[in-house]
Image (cartoon, rainbow, N blue to C red):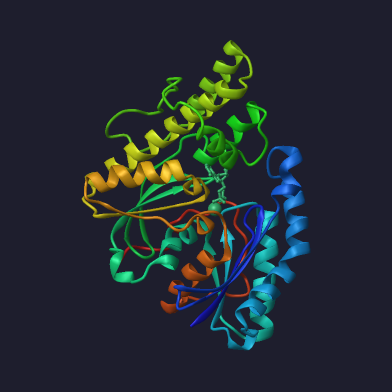
Amino acid sequence: MIVLGIETSCDETAAALVRNGRTILSNIVASQIEVHRPYGGVVPELASRHHIRNIVPVVEESLDQAKVTLDELDGIAVTRGPGLVGALLVGVQLAKSLSYVSGKPLIGVNHLEGHLVAPQLSLGSLEELPARHVALLVSGGHTALVLVESFGCYRPLGATRDDAAGEAFDKVAKLLGLGYPGGPIIERLAEQGDAAAIAFPRGLRRRDELDFSFSGLKTAVMNHVRRAGTPEGQALNDVCASFQQAVADVLVRKTLRAATDRRVKAVVAGGGVLANQAIRDALQRALAARDIALFVPPIALCTDNGAMIAAAGTLRLARGERSGMDLNAQARLPLLRAEESCE
Ligand code: KG4
Ligand code: ZN
């Protein structure tokens, strides 16, 4: 079963071909980072325009690279939400057109479900990943812990009450004058810094609290800059390392708590922030100490891509689900739709 996955929810125009929901035949990502960099964040109108310009060449390249024709596809999966509505519409519209002309089944996919299944693209055997597990989703738009009972059955355990963790990286980088996107820049500077230099706050510390809060951390960095001036050199490295440590501590503590509370033996982690090696390592260490397996995709599959959408789409198509030509983009789309049950 070969499925084309199309992703345009934010600032990456992406398409991929995946066989049986596991094997990547091609995975093309046209990043718009350079387009948005001068503005310090994603400009929705510019994102839509660049998706329109890039989406057809990106899809063509994904087919060419995989040496697969439209005729040979078994389905077309596309991100239907959540995300920037004008950006999502570009992918949804193209997917509908391709489905219409080829007669291949169409399936709209929740972007967050894509991040949840991304580790499956790198597993040797699916047996390794228990169907019941805890998932940690950490991106520019989301920070959430979810209990996955089985594919498609999601129970929310906690979510951010204000900024997402990736958003905190981006905002802190901006206030330190470092540029966009903040995550990779902060990670690089943090490598040379002392993570214990500044005691930044860890939000919502209560033991049984699985919600997150990162706005206090961002304000603490801002106050530090007001007090001590914009840091440079080693002082800047120390601020970055201390900030990154605060984010890592919170993610690790709450994930561990969720996994032990729910007595699961596996955690899946995904989203752009999991591209951060220090955070990956911290999670790995903490979970391994409790004998809990961590499944996290390779770094290229942590940030937005079409392969994870194809993988989630394949699982949905295999359950007999189809989207109609009335498929629409939804800026806000919860992981568990109201009409779905866990039966
Ligand atoms: O999943 P993603 O590509 O897009 C969304 O769905 O939001 O995540 C993008 C976010 C950005 O906020 C970016 O700063 C963050 O992921 N990010 C990182 C790293 N690479 C990307 N955060 C921390 N460390 C990184 N290395
Ligand atoms: Zn994402």
